[in-house]
Length: 203
Image (cartoon, helix red, strand yellow):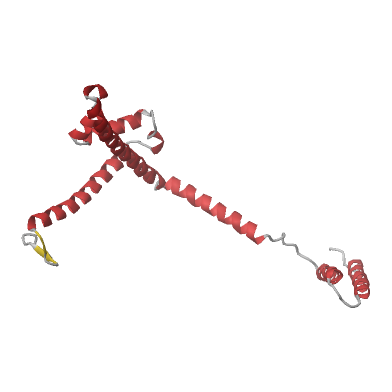
């Protein structure tokens, strides 16, 4: 492991120990921020905050936004509180751009908060069960539509033979250049009729 108190030489370029410590600290800060953010989001969710509340003009959203504003650096808060009448026209042109950028940053924080709440809602057991049931129903409907099978019917041997001969006769009628079509169709029809006549009655 690299000793952070020593400089690093990479392709004749020196990264000083001070710069190395700053890079390492920035990564630690990222992990610390993520942990802190998760803790805050979990707490808000546990207290009943839900994504449908994070919408324009909802008091809950206004409160969340105000709390986030309080956590922004003083310079950002001052930008958002700035007013046109406090500046010359030329100064306001610059200030307005900076204020817009700060407002976008705050809006992004609120959007990320709402997304985090939505993710927690999706992990609720009830929501998972509903999603699973919906997926199962969809899969069953798709399978049924794809199968397109006629309802199963239990045929007697006589009925099965009559159906098979009847289908054969229909195919012969539609076939081109099939020899002895008239004779085959006549014989087939007679056979089907004979099978029907000798069909035993159900006991």
